[in-house]
Length: 471
Image 1 (cartoon, rainbow, N blue to C red):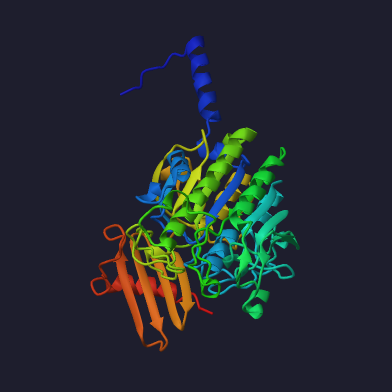
Image 2: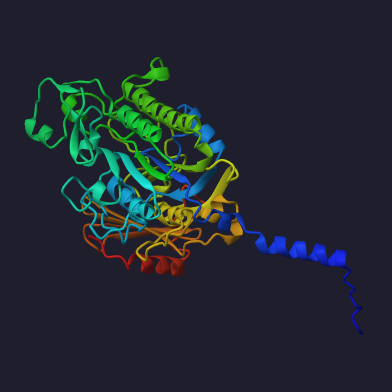
């Protein structure tokens, strides 16, 4: 059977040529976005639980600005912090490494001079960079100092311990002290206060997180034509862990706002007011972007560094802060590491919820995609830009995610691979070991341990844990 001869008239040739040109020139949203160099703002809360926001199911605490923000962006439902406590989690965020490879695994110490940060990479693409808030990865004079790790400007707490005080006598601006109006009236324990721990009997005038917001708004006012990266790391709703010294509960806020007359304990009112105050900060940042006319040129990310705490009189069960997940801060169950994660970029990303499984170490490769710079080999992350652009079929996925944490001679490790998650706990004697296995697709609350039913899967996930020696 012979094929019919196709006769191409001059008109049909023109139409065919135009179609070929259009198809050849067409690019996917992903390819159009690579190297587009939007402004990047990453807003990080401290100890905010998966269920502490209205958009994630919170019923009592009001967060209208963040809820609106979520309705305009991609709301991730399966995003994970770098770790279950502050410093190692932030280490993973800044260096794109998971908890097994990052410098800081448990306690605060400086990241290494050779550690590559997101800020350093973005600077090579012409970004101006700023860190405002809580750093916790190295003080002045150490290898982890912000201005030596890619940030042109830094302001706030460099020391993780000083960050426990909401009314310090000073903050840091670049390498110098920035005095605040909070005055020490008397000091019960000068040894502790000398290292920035206590705030006993201070005259409270300037709330540190209010100052962070003022500095962030001032930074945005001064932005020029260059793209910028602003890392805005609040300390809300972390407890003031020095409540034993100031003889007050540890949820500290200038006023109780709309919760003043609630029939709740004072620390519950204060904690709720802290979260709503954070919501107000986010609203102020978004309003400033509109005023500056750079709203559509700026991608804004909001998240938390780990799950909710149970300190300073705060009880995460009272408000269901873990969102129905098991555990909280310092646990490697979902409540300790699954966190809110919302990304907004007007006209570029379609508002929706996403079940893409991602983690803090994915921020670096995503930022590299946006800036058009090469991802260093040291990164464990995978860009989630395809997910943002609703190209899920092109989104690479992790083979596994890994976390570890040691406290009080108890070693904790966790691995998620697909829908399976294993948690291993060693207490003191290495022989006292417990391994639990959960299917998160069917049991996100981790109620049913399936380790006995699936020994082969347990063996596979434990073999991943064994790749990472702990400190």
